[in-house]
Image (tube, rainbow, N blue to C red; front, side, top):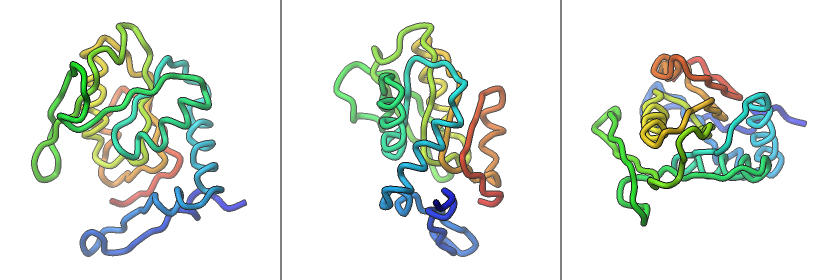
Amino acid sequence: MKKIEEYVRSIPDFPEKGIIFRDVTSVLQDADGLHLAIDSMQEKIKDIEFDIVVGPESRGFIFGVPIAYNLHKPFVPVRKKGKLPCETVSVSYELEYGTATIEMHKDSIRPGQKVLIVDDLMATGGTIEAIIKLVKQLGGHVVGAVFLMELAGLKGREKLKGERVESVIVYEGK
């Protein structure tokens, strides 16, 4: 069986010269790669007790839903502003070039619930930091975050100090 790293396609000089783009679609397009990715992420969190899985659109849905399903936990989507139909809580955060606002349904997390965040990639940590703020607004407690890939050169872990962060693959660069 191949290692999970072998399923990730690396594309040099995308989106700009000097960047190596780590393409998750090559993992998703291979049944063995997808199976290995989900199993590897679950292995990283096997000792974490949690009540609910939260994932940002869109790739957090792709990896978070099967983990929630396998472990018989509910899944809560985090979406861009204006995409959820019921009453929401929101938070805005800084991007490299501008700002973004994400939302969760106000009734998606009850006070005291233990939350696991799932996403495909941790880069700067800004999105996950914003999700943590949303969870706290609703009275939840983040007990960990798990990613398939991490770009260590972008120092996302520094933004998430004090939180448990697990990554299946860690790339040293950006």
